[in-house]
Amino acid sequence: MAEQIKTQSAHWGDKAVDLLLQQRGEGPFLIASGISPSGRIHVGNLREVLTADIMYRILKERGHEAKLIFVADDYDALRKVYPFLDPAVYEKYVGCPLSEIPAPDGSDLTYAEYFLQPFVKSLKKLKIDAHVVRASELYRDGVLKKQIIQALNARDEIAEILTRITGKEIGEDWSPFNPHCRLCGNMKTTKLVKWHPETEEITYYCSHCDKERTVPVVGNGKLTWRADWPARWAALGVDVEPFGKDHGGKGGSYDTGKEIVRKIYGGVEPFPIIYEWIRLKGLGDMSSSKGNVVSVDEVLEVVPPDVLRYFITRPAPKASLALDLVTQLLNLVDEVDDESKKQRDARSVELSQAGGFVPLHIPFNHLVNVWQVAGGDFEKVKKILTRTGFKYSDEAALLERCHYADEWLKRYATPEFIFQLLDETPAEIVPLISDEEKKALSLIADELEKNPEADGNAIHQIIYNIANSTGVSMGNLCKALYRVTLGRDRGPRAGWFVAMAGNDQIASRIRKFLAK
Ligand SMILES: [Zn+2]
Image (cartoon, rainbow, N blue to C red):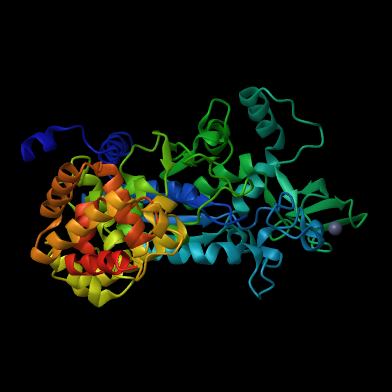
């Protein structure tokens, strides 16, 4: 069996590294990823960083020198007032860099840091050892100065490349450099008037301030995206970079970047890895501006870091991927936890290690049920697990997993997963139980009292036999049992549910109900 698994097709990461080494030699390699912190950084964005991290991990594993960086595009301008922003506050900041406008919560953080910092924390939890590089600092510190000068000197050549490759006409007044007006803070109300190569200054006009000014090129603006991305490749020496399919299409910014980096900056484009967007099941592609996002820190409240890594690491970057926060999350925990799961991909699990994951071999769905039967009491959880035949060696890991179960129930569980063992049957339920059902329930109570040690299987058989002998259908009998103990029509599989709750507990609840 192990042999069979080994001969299955290799992990996409291993194949990509093979190809990289074939094409680019032995390294060292700089692997870059990047995100614009314009809103909550979501699980979809994580595909970019994790794809880079997988390349990084495999290169290190094979003994190559590699470095992973995460470039935060915090010098990008706020494009519009997003639905989650207060227009009264943000209207005036449209066009200003994210690194220089206030955070939505009114704190001392900048807008960019407000969204960036929780993500950077999540990266640590996910054991993604990326050096965070801020675009605002690259520009402020003059790291891209050489490329800015090259781009301004080669304005016409870049315009020709863009027109030829994208098929779009470029206006006479187009410039690869966007001046940043330091008087009003805007970079969208400005136009480059003249580039002075001898003094390395620019003259720009700001329509907001209605002023023309001459300022040093460093610290007063940025390259436009299609000139900026290849400038970064050249200045930092990026060897590998994953990017979304929007950049990877024909005429996309990778296509134009390839030519610009070679002809204008004298560099080489990185080895590309194009990835598909992550959708949110039933809600389409995740997008901060659409608001249908689940942030990375949110998911990390519900599943261990290894599980979130595994979700994204397992399919190839080009495969479509939809996040389902209900059943899929439950299954993913088990795939990572239990090596006997059929769908499990061992190499992906290996590449998903974030440190600290302890396999428990308790199905997550079972734990979710046990947690509810126990009413959130950890001591009871332990007793129920022992009674239902589950062994655990690491109590701290079990407690942690219980917290994940609890958060999952609070955040994402749909009503059919949620229940509460009641002390008393609700008054409105009482008239719903027929006399035949009462008789059958009483027989169940007798059997449970006689067989206090009966397990889920045995109890299922008991219920089944009583249903047969009394002529009440199995479905109706289970429904009656759920109604009496949970106050609702459905619950976890009846025999196993009784075993979880405790045979004596269920018997006494039935008795209490019948005595009414
Ligand atoms: Zn201005």
